[in-house]
Image (cartoon, rainbow, N blue to C red; front, side, top):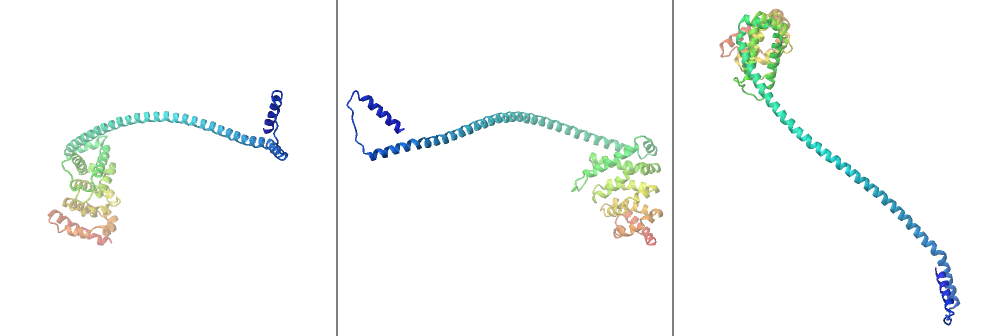
Length: 340
């Protein structure tokens, strides 16, 4: 660069020789040589330094530009993704609003259906209570019972009766102290139990229940063991009367006495605070004891399970009928000593 500059200066001086008087500057040789050396060094090194910096700068610039292009592409892709997700969000929000509306509509329909179902259930319970109460009265007539049992729906009726009784007991709250005797539900199951009692009071009815409606007998024994002492005493009494009537039939007595948990069930019932429940539990127990063939199979379990002290306490009851039956049963139970 300096050499070019000097050449330019010399050329300029030559051009001016014709016009002006030539001028000279004295420079020491050593300084001139030093200057010449420096110029030569600059001429050799300056392009390398300048070119290296420029090349590095250009490379960095290329890298920056490439990175910027990638960032722009990424930004563009992010914008596209953002638009895509925005569209999906709007679609999801629209779907959500539609589903909320559908849910509200369905909930309203469900509430209406529940209300209708409740009304239908109340109507069916009321109708069932009325019809079964009438049938309870009619079933006290032997010919009416024969007609009922001769129909094609007799087995179905007693199956439904068992299911209805079971549903009723399951619906009882744990802390229930007193059952509403006037409710349609209570009257419904009482009427069903009363019908079974009247049917079992007849020989043909006992045979029918033992042969075709054992599910009902199983359900009644199960329910008697599920209900707490002092609860639904009238219902318990009717079921015990039904089982006692069935026990008059030898086949029925064998089936009842051989049912799992029958003897512990009697122990459970004899601890009920209600006099009527204890009375009918003693009658059912006596029915087992007075049949030698049945007693032979149950004697060992009776000796180990029956609450003799409770029966002794009942023999001192203020209720004359219960007292007399308990004393009579204690005499009957002496046969267990011979069976040992």
